[in-house]
Image 1 (tube, rainbow, N blue to C red):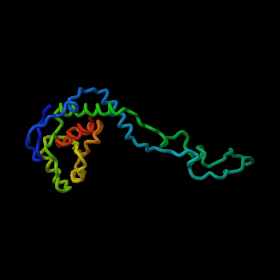
Image 2 (cartoon, rainbow, N blue to C red):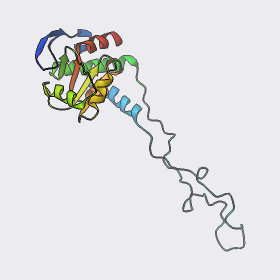
Image 3 (tube, rainbow, N blue to C red):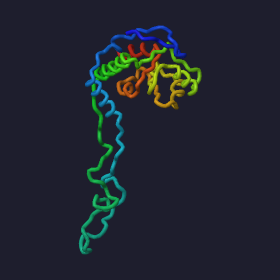
Image 4 (cartoon, one colour):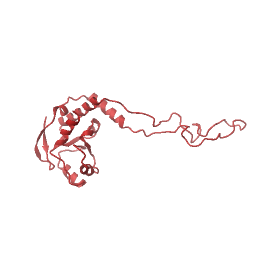
Length: 207
């Protein structure tokens, strides 16, 4: 598949041939869904956590003697029956949401999403992307000249600190290195922008 290549001014600077083994894969929605669900589960943070009677503070002393008070017998203030005591069967940080999925499936799903982006004209290829300084204004100026409307993911061939820093404060924009590319991040943004070197890096990294 051939695509037009733009320069940083948004003007055509030639064409590029997208590798068929990366951008010419037949789409399988079920596989993409399976991979994305697993990636979302693996990123899920366990936040809710309750303490049981062994973890709450206090309760070292028996509240009152066993017999003769007329009250119910109790052995600890940490009992779930008491206010401030432990929680029975509450959510804990011991939960594990991880879902295993093999490398071939993850890689193929990513290629499918890349193929869909290219097929639906949601892929913008640049001759190169260079910023002399980490200035948000300079980055925004380049993006204004690009043919897209919506959220954008910039795929960098390697870590470019100036581009990463300049992109941080721009809404609906994110950067990622080609070697860290995955189906979930690709689907989180409508458009994809990458320099020609990124295509080469993807092919070499995921061959």
